[in-house]
Length: 121
Image: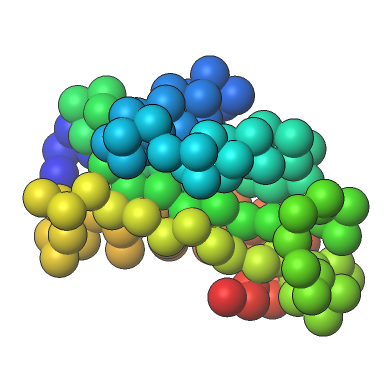
């Protein structure tokens, strides 16, 4: 785990991850729509990624604003110090090795620094 780092994803990293997912899912229109929604909500979400040797292997998204255009039932899940966590992903070959746990702790600490004291899932 020495070459594993947790980061807040840049727009470029988010695009890279979506393009990988779209390719992995045979250019699925559904995955293309997920990418579109993610990018149009880039200012209402914080995307966290875990990189191993520079490759994205884990990810999670925190929706942090009621202004998110695509989240349903957000009123009780986002705002007033609450963030909604979604899109928990770990590449299959890295599951059950502690990588996502490390990313989750990183995300939790970052959100607390931003005054999000309640995390909903």
